[in-house]
Image 1: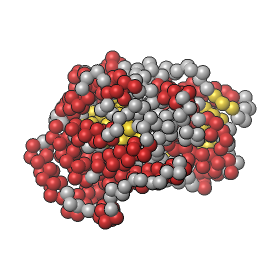
Image 2: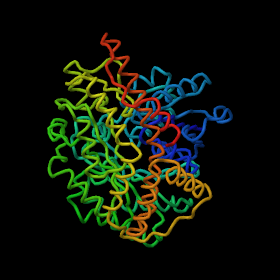
Image 3: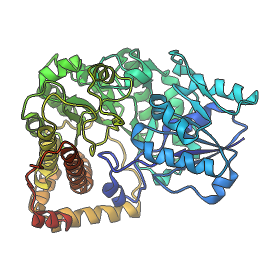
Image 4: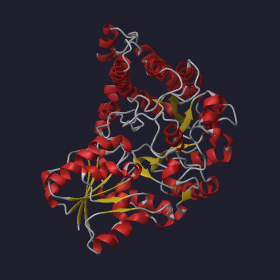
Length: 534
């Protein structure tokens, strides 16, 4: 069997980082860990080719070569995924699809022409599919019926199928699932509330595979809550600590965790000993009533500002997620989010309008209440209106969201937060060697310095802050410069958010026959100056 694995395009989003990636000559942030894991589970006497459409298009030769085309996608990739399924069918190819999107909305892939829907977790459903096609099945839906696989049996992903030069970060996974019950979250729907972990030996074998293939640098531990099973993660970190030291710290890690990480100093120290440098926190809102209503109780047990500061002072850079549009939310929620971000000096804060995702508790509650909007499936993107009827006026929520996003990524405010965050951070606990520096990275650094150190109105602050970091915390100068580099993406993306959200709101108002009342907060001269890089 010749299998062509295709990963669909992502739209521009908070996480796409195009402008930053251009600086280091990389095509996209992360490769598709799901597809290379699928390739490892399938029979190894089959042939595989992988095309990540975020890095390059599929060639005619690859289309012709394939006996079967396989897809995996998240909901946010649905548009390109469906188009590529149709393209495969136009060429007379058999199509199989799995992943979160098809698991949540299987009928959409089926209507586009997919022959095989391999849903839920592949460790269970891929063998069912292999047996079916061996028996001559030409179509079918394969599900696990609620059974969760033992991930200690998951093989090492086929990292050899990747073009390392296309990516900025490599992914590994230690666990699946999360113990919490956040109403809006689909992770507990897809993977359950009992976190399942790989063995320490298993994870180290994956790192050895990447090391042998020549990867050095950033690793994203893609667990949706890395600390969901604290006992097992501590056992793994103890062994990872030894492995990293023996290999002279070839990898620096970032991951996602719940805010209760702040309550476990031992865990934070272990992470730092293993060269973890960044953690994404799902904070969502500083409004405790909204946190309680959405059942994110873990964020109400201790003051959030203190938790963020404790994690930062330990030596972990914090990225955080925030949401607007919860039921019962009071006027001014957007500004309270901005104030919280400014108070905690979080540089990169993903700010989104709430989306009801299929089969979540929120989805079912809103469906029961008759508040879901027909045909509006949440995509977890920052350019999409709420896909349900909120409890306060949509115009009010939208204006607060646009204003908040615009304020957060004002160049001066972003630079100020970056500096304050770096100066708050504890110093690294390990002395990792500098990775080899490519000419593209030198060129990217020079471009960044030219833009932020000479062209922009914030240039004097940039040099002042960089000099202060170099004098007081030279070990963190690289992290300061890197965090500054992300502003290249956000400066453009905040305009995209504003334009697309306002367009959708105008359409909504027209449908409701309400005269548009949104004030234009940014005049054409200011927009032109921003576009010019000033």
